Every structure is written in C-alpha cells, then in structure tokens.
Amino acid sequence: MQPLSAHAQQYLFGVFLDGKRIGTHRFAIEREVTNNAVRVTSQAEFTVKVLRIPVFRYQHSAVENWRAGCLESIDTETDVNGTRTSLTGRRNAAPPSASRLPGVVAAACSAPGCRRW
Image (cartoon, rainbow, N blue to C red; front, side, top):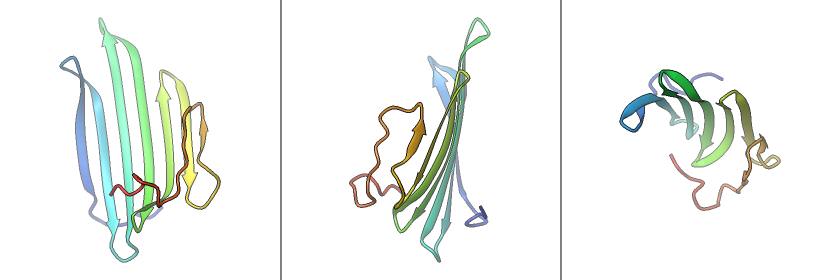
C-alpha cells in the first residue's frame, strides 16, 4: 500500500513491568484529507526475563484503514511465546476471521465504539 501522506504522527511508548522496561509499543497515524482516509499502524514487542532468561515474549503488528470514521480493514499478526495468531477483517465482507483468537466480534460501522480516530 502506498503511504497516505509524507508526514505521519508517530508515537513511541516504553512498556514497563514492575518498574523495568520490557519493550516498546509504536503507533503511526497517517491522514489523507482528500479521501477522508486514515491508516493506523502499530507494533509492540515485549520480553519478560527472570534471572536474564526470557520467560515471556510478545510481538504484535497491526494495520487499520479507516475512511469517513469507519473501519474499512484490519490486518494483525501476534506471536506469544511462539504461538502465532492473525486477524483479518474487511468492511462489508464476511465477519473478521481469526486463528486461535476467542471472542472475536464483528460490528457494523454504525455500532457504538466503531469511530476512534
């Protein structure tokens, strides 16, 4: 996909557990005024160690495409300690499909909470 704009809003957060940094979470928000479109990308990486040995690893990436305040599509990949899951959803298509993700709920764009950005 082509970038929506040359200037994306970038956010970087440190993730801490018991006062120790275990990773980062990055967000980028790109806006295209002409088509009223927004793309949100997210990446998270966490590693929890006990006595310098990794006991928990988490990696997540997501791309959301919005138009006129409605979620048009979402694609995610998550790896938790080597177990990979993914979610793909498209507006006006079948409900989102998920592998190994319980509790996935599909909602129409007019549903409360749909409009975020």
